[in-house]
Image 1 (tube, rainbow, N blue to C red):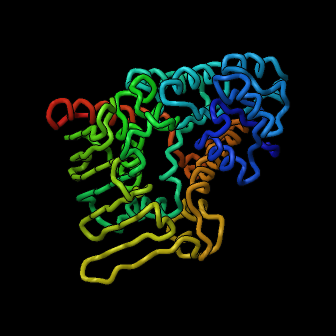
Image 2: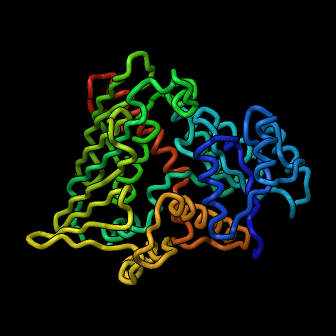
Image 3: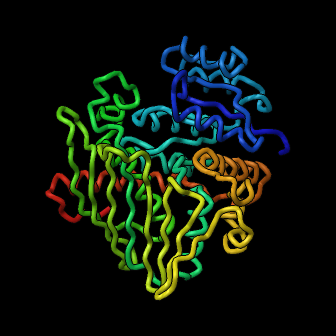
Length: 386
C-alpha cells in the first residue's frame, strides 16, 4: 500500500490541545492524512474544525455514530483506515469499541477506559476484531527511552534492583477547574476522568515508562493519594512504593500541585552493574553510570546510538545537535502504528520494530494500576496487588 493512510478523528475540536498534537504528529512523516472527523459534541464546533482543516464538509460529522455509519457507506477505497480517539477519558471505551466492531483500526488516548472491567472487555473486542489498536503513551517513543530499554534488554545494567520514576507538574496548584479551564474541569471530574485524578492523568505515564524501560511488571503497590486543593474531588498528588516482577523495588510519585514544575517526568533505573537516568525535559541525552567510573552521556542522533539500538535509530529523524522531542515521540508511535496496519493489510506479520508501540495490553495494565493505587490509598497505603 503506497498511498497515505486515511485518518479520522473523534475529539480534538477548536482549542483542544491534544487533538492538534495528534494531527501534527500523524502527518509529520507523510504517511497519514486527516480526511474526516467528529471533532466536538457541538456539531457547529465540529464543522468549524473541519473548515480549519479544509476537509470535505460531507466528512465532518456531528457525532461518532454518524461518522461510522457514513464512512461505512463509502466505497472501501475512500473510507477512513483508522480513527484517532482524542476525547475525555469517559468516552474512550464506547468510541473505541464502536469503531473496532465496525472494522476500523483505532489509536486511542490514555487511559484506555474508565474501569478495569471496560479495559478487559475492550481487550476481547480488539482480539475478536483483528484490528490494530494503539494507545498513545508517547513517552516510551523517545529515541533515548528506546536506547535505555535496549541497554536493559542487552544486560548492560545487570539484574535490575530499583526503579525510581517521577512526574511532577504544577498547573493545578489552584482550583483552575473553577476558573474556566476546560482541561482542568474534566480532569478533576470523577464522571469524566475516572477513579483517579493526577494518578490517572500522569501517574499512568510514569508507570508505563518504568515497565517499558525496565522490562518488568508492577506486581504490588502501596500508595498514598492526597487532594490538596480544597473542594477538588480527585487526587492531585500521589506517592507509591512499587514491587516489580523479578524482585525489583521502586518508587513512583506524581503531582499536579508542585509549583514550578512543568512536565518533569524522569526516570532512574539501577541494576547490579550500572544505572541509567533520563529526563523528558532534556530528552536527547541519556546518562549512563557504571561502578567507579565517570558518568557517560549518550546523545541522540549519533551513529553509536543506532548501532546500539535499532529502535532508537528508527525513532530518530534529525542529526545530532538538532533536538527532537514531544511531537516527534507522538509521530514515532504513529509511524509504527501505520506500518503495522500496512503489514496486516499485506498479509504479513509486522516486525518487532514496526509493532513497537503501546496497545491494549498496556491499556489494561494502566487501568489495573489506577485501580490498585486508589484501593491501596483508601486502605491506608496497604500493599495491593495488580
